Structures are given as C-alpha cells and as structure tokens.
Image (cartoon, rainbow over all chains, first blue to last red; front, top):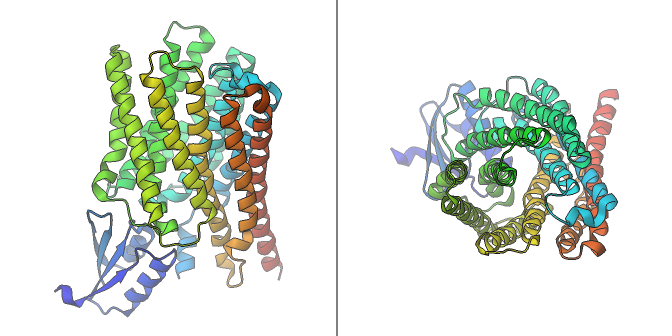
Length: 73
Length: 423
C-alpha cells in the first residue's frame, strides 16, 4: 500500500513553499490516491483546505519531531 | 489560492498591530525612567523606580507583544480561531495599555489607588484576552507539544495576574503578607509559566520554520512545558506550607528546564540550513545565551548563604532585557514585515517584498543599539553611578528605533495600498 503514496519532504523548505508544493501535489492526485507530507510543525492552514475540500488526513508525530501527515483525496 | 486562503484565515492587520506599535513606547518610558532616576534604578530590585521599570518592561513592552502575537498566530500554530480577533484586540488593548501605565505610576509615586487601579485594569485586559483565547482553544485537542504549551501558558498568565492583583492590593492596603516571597512567586509565574512556556511552545514551530533547523525531538518537547508548570505549582505549594527545601528544589527544576531549552535551541540553530544569519537568528542567539547566563546567576544566588544583593538585579536585567525581550523582538522582525506583505496580497501582483517593507539594514542598526543597551544595562548593575543613565538612553533609543522600523513597514504598506486602490 505504501508504494502508491507520494512523498513531499518539506522539512527544510522556507515558508510558504511547503504549503505551495503540498497544494500542487494535491492537485495532481486522483481520487483515492494518497500523499505523505513531512514537516516539523502541524500545518493547520493546510488542514483547513483539506477539510474544505473533503479530503481525509492522519497525522503522526515521530520521535525526531517530524509530523507525518498522510492525506487521502 | 494560497495567498487568498492565507489572507482569509489571517486576523485583520489592525488587530495585532496596535499591540506591536504601542509595545516599544513602554521601552522608551523605561529608558527615560533610567535617565531621570539614574543610579536609584539599580540600587535594589525593590526601589519604586526599579519596580516601575520592571513593570513597564514586563506588563507593558513584553505583554503587549505576546498578546498581539498570540492573536495573530493562534489559528496558524494551533488551529484555534478567535471568533472576532479585531473585537478582542479592541477590548483588550486599552485596559492593558492604561493598566501598565497606571501601575508604573503607582509604583513610582507610591499612590495606592494608582497601584490598585493599574492592577485591576491589567487584570481585566488579561482576563478578557484569556476568555476569548480560551474559547478558541476549547475543543482544540492537544495534538502537538505547541498546543499543549499554549494552553499551559494561558494558565501561567492567569496565575501571574491573580498573584499580581493580590500583591498590588496587599501593598496598597498594607496587608500583612510575605510580600517578598509572593513577589518572587509572581515573577516566577510571569517569567517562566507565561513568557517562558509561551516562548518555548512557539519556538517549537518558528525556529525550524524560519531558521530551517531540525525539529525539536518529540518526547522532551511534550514534557518541558508541563515540567515547568509542575515546578511552579511545587514552588507555590512550598510557600503555602512553608517548606524551604521544596521551594529550592522547584527553583532548581526551573533553572535546569530553562537551561536545557536554551542549550537545545542553540544546538539546533548550529545545524540550520539557512546559511545567512538574519536579525531574528542573532536576536535569538543573544536571548538564549543571556538567558543561560541569567539562570547561572540565579543558581549562584540561590545556593550562596549570603548572596550579593546585586545578584538578583543582575538576573533581572539579563533575563528580562537580554533574554526574553531579545527573543520577542527577534520574532517581531519576522511577524510585522510578513503581515505587512500578506495583507497586500489581495491587491494582486507587484506588492513590495518583505525586505523592502522593512529593510535589513534598518533592522541591523536597531539590533546594534539594542545589544549596546543590554551590555550597558548589565554593566550598570556594577557601575550604576557611571552607567545607569547611558544605559537608559541607549535603551530608550533602541526602543524608539524599533518603533520607527515597525512604523516604516506599516507606512510603506499603507502607501502601496493607497497607490493601488487609487490607480
């Protein structure tokens, strides 16, 4: 299952690049596809967009402080 | 879509801006007080001038910036939206501003009604803010160490306010209370429970985001804010049941927690991927290093049987000015240009970039003045006759320079906006 997840490691990107690139990747996903976003913070503004667009997401905080956000469109 | 969305989620510029623009004025007043009162300000932490200056800095300068910044960042870092941010700002700003001025006036003149009135107004402003922030945070699960820290910091502010009210009324009414011990506890809740925990919670987000450092490891991040609040509760209980050893244990825990955070952040900053150090990074480095120095001073004072009375003053000057305030001002240099730029985005392409709204050169000059002011203030603890007034002058100038820089960014924002709307 994890093979079909697209990965966006935005941990060392300056703002607003993580948001911009996440939006770009989201727009390329077909319904049912998933992407994983890595960040050192919870992206609350992005959550709001995901909610507005009816996407589902799950967030996991790794021990090194990385937030792993798995989004299903 | 990105710009539109960010703009849509952001509170109106006017909401946080009033706090950011009035905050440096309290720094100017504190500097002027040092010029007028000179060595008296550095004679002891308990002189009327020292108490007034301390509250101009904490309940004026720092509190204004922290409340303004929280109004702005709660939606971004916690997903907690204030129902009406502009209404919150309009209700909170006047009592906070007037309250800090009256309180400082009350300390200086020894007038009971000024002390009580100032404390009541400050408390009203804080409680109005906590009410609105509490409503925004209620129902927001603590899914990150930052959200947990923000909630705890709000509790820290409430404890500071309650103790501050008690102290003001006890001082004004001559109540038989252990004022010195209660004042220490009030200061500890304010500096560690409110300012410290807030700074830590926000640092978890902004240090990796703006300085491109690795993140703060999860486990210690979760525990640091509750550890600090636990130590403060222990200190409070130790005072209530009169257990000096327990109080000292709690103080040691606070010194350890603060030093760990400062050392940890400095270590992360050494691994940053943004090569060029900016003003915010330099301010934070100053703040963290000076905070560590201050905590070392405090630990020396806590363990010495008969500490030099200047130890407490040295701790206060280093921790307040060089420590917490430096970090807060450093953050302001990220927040204000960003907001000035963000709120121009709905007008379309062509808005001036952030570094033209507030130039790096202007920020660096102001930072130089601030660093000189911190060095002179620290030295003035040992040479008050020589350096108290120069330190006051330098701090007043550095604060005025900050106000000038922020006002310039706002002026350029409005000039572009007017030109665009007139076109």
